[in-house]
Amino acid sequence: FELANRIVAREIDHIDQVFRMRHADGQWVWMRARAQVMDPEAPEIQLIGIAVDVTEQRHLALRSEAADLRLRTAIENITESFVLWDSTQRLI
Image 1 (cartoon, rainbow, N blue to C red):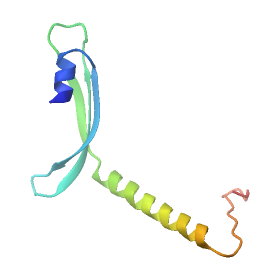
Image 2 (tube, rainbow, N blue to C red; image 1 turned 90 degrees about the vertical axis):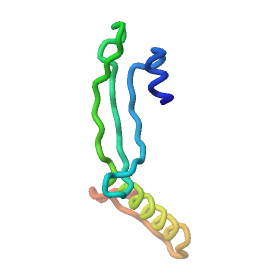
Image 3 (cartoon, rainbow, N blue to C red; image 1 turned 60 degrees about the vertical axis):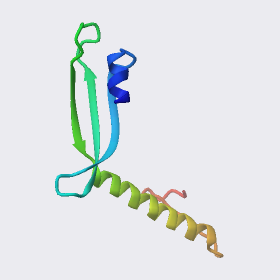
Image 4 (cartoon, one colour; image 1 turned 45 degrees about the vertical axis):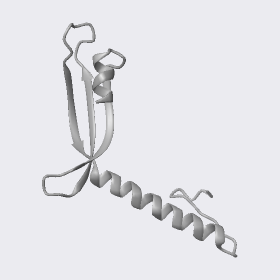
């Protein structure tokens, strides 16, 4: 409602939000909604937009963060020397 009120008040002319909602089957999903006011000067406000399920992307990002944290913790706690090379054989 806050976003709708801001659009009606002509404070903003677009929406780009990620939020969680319950699917018809009862599970929670993450959605990304993007919309744009078609003509900011028109007397009546019309939005055009799209909503996309980004649940899998969110889960992948969380798993990647967890893996990065585990790797970082392992590297910081290793008592031996440690080096890392990239795919072009450069020392990272």
